[in-house]
Length: 334
Image (cartoon, rainbow, N blue to C red; front, side):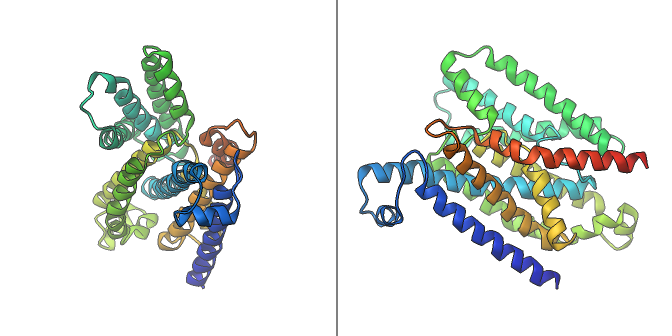
């Protein structure tokens, strides 16, 4: 029954993705009909249609796909590793660390003209995400969800403060570019850059599938999992490393987008149960639909002005985070 439910939810969410995909291609400050989209994809569209579709809207769909997959899977892995329902890369300082790595590279890129931004920026974002995770987990010693939340918030605040100090040293052009980055948006829609991010995710995918083997045993507690033959510490480190890598890729593609990794796994578990093999694909599709839907709202809500995608995502997900936080506080009081 669980497999059927998982397949049904995946089919429904994929259908929703196709609907959002069509809306994203046709709607915006310049409206395109289905015939114009089809002609452009076949190479027969006008110069304006090719520019709008191939240089703006299709890259946004591709980045929504990459960021949604990376953030939702990363959040799910963190919740498994920490046994903490409130765990998310945006709360635990990992996104802030990735943003700091990217900001440092962008701030210094003028001094190192030989650096290839297409490759160096994702590497810096991933390195920063590992620094953020290291700071959070070095400070955290007790398995208390609220304590971990506070440590992560403190780490993120510290790293965001460092980012602000760097921003104050920049010229107006670079400052405006970094503000767009920090607010969470698809600022780099170059197909070569998107290809690097997509290739990195494809390489990580089989590693992720191998690492998931036996991860359900972690929910039984370290003693029971070890007694059943699972190398608990090694498994946690594997899953944590993958979560941090995926978070770094997501930040490299879409900046500091928050709470997707918190909301998507929670909703997926409510839909199909707590086995990670069942709810992870549902969470991944939920994350993609959430970010793509937010991108559509960001572009059309106040057209021709455009909102940052991260702002729209935060407005959509923050109430759910507050609800979870309230419930967790009530459980701790009991």
